[in-house]
Picture 1 (cartoon, one colour):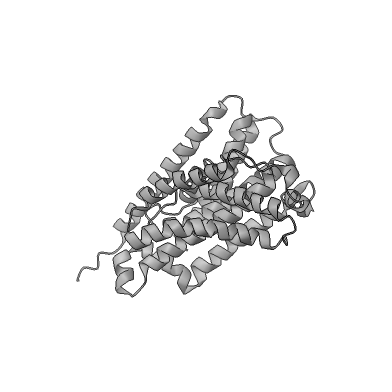
Picture 2 (cartoon, rainbow, N blue to C red):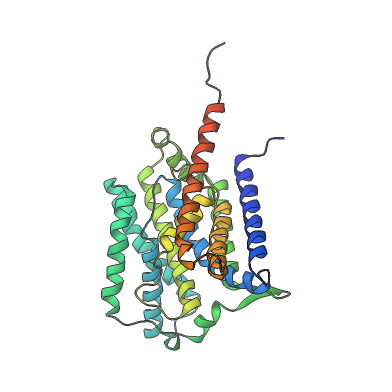
Length: 331
């Protein structure tokens, strides 16, 4: 029985993840414990959200380099609104953060879809632009934990349930629900499969009557909204938000996407793999800090190497699959 390519990628990722855990367990004393899971799960919950948003964009043959700045803006502006209006209903706050993020995403989507500008150029520009807006709006001030509502600062550490010493926090549950919802939408609904069609073959999609511009715009809005939700979780986890909040998350989001098996050239991928990719990247990032044989400054280099290897492996795999396809010649 032939295993589907998507399932094979998930199995390979799980194998790599398990191998990584066993390797660091052999190198770091007291590595395997509940504290490792509790520490990584909270971080992965944030990275997975922005990585899923990034996946929507990458599926359409685009990329969002401004996503870290959007997280920072959403976290800061949401915190500022809560300080000014501390009695806002808690369920409204994450929706507010998602709305803030969606506005920034709509700016990217409009520029890319309407004017057909390269997304890497647009989002590189808005990365700096959105960060500048944050710096100017903050006027040098920071959001501090003592000025935020108690429910918000406690949300990130509140457990939904526990399994022994393993703490399953609500932010982890929310992140998993978002990932599963995105997976169902992309694989079970016609509107979701449009993202694959646009990225796989734009000309054929246009011939079939699919609106590429609208789909690309929607991908950036989704990316922005999920970055906004990640900003809310970022605010809840750390409390103290400065103008550099979210800096560097764009690299982690791209890393999680390509390591998770989404083709950087668009058209194929699986958000379940993106979740595993996010977990793998954060596991390596956290473990390298504790591994005495390697300087912590090598963390970014290792992430860059992972991205290169993932893209190279995906390119080689796709070329081999294309070679195996029948040419359709006559007998």
